[in-house]
Amino acid sequence: MSNTFFGVAIDCVDAAAVANFWAKVLGRQIADHPTSEHAVVLVDDAAVHGPRLAFHQVPEPKTVKNRVHLDLIATEFEAETDRLVGLGAQKVRDVEHSGTRWTTFRDVEGNEFDLIADDTRR
Image (tube, rainbow, N blue to C red):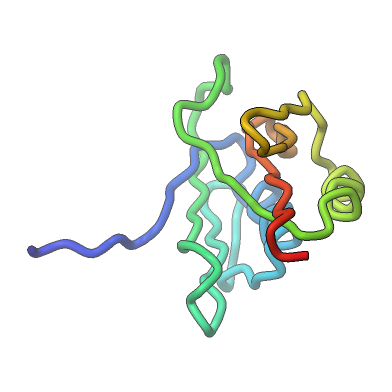
């Protein structure tokens, strides 16, 4: 095999703004010199909390639901929901299916993501 998973690239209008949101959500650092055209949220030192996220400005706005989205999981589901809303996320819907519950949110540019309740770690 000649490839390695490097990260997730996300199209947006203002890369620095969206990267700042996600850096706060994930407790990570942004690479030096973010701009509205390009910004990167770095992987933490332990490299155990997901991939590198790169944000790239594109000329067209988001018009439909994401085909790919990020999933977060939290043991303190309600507290994390409140924190995400405080950072600028918008709640879209609450779902419970087959014993699993999650909330779908939109980030500061309308990209959907889910927060899953991790009831197994209590």
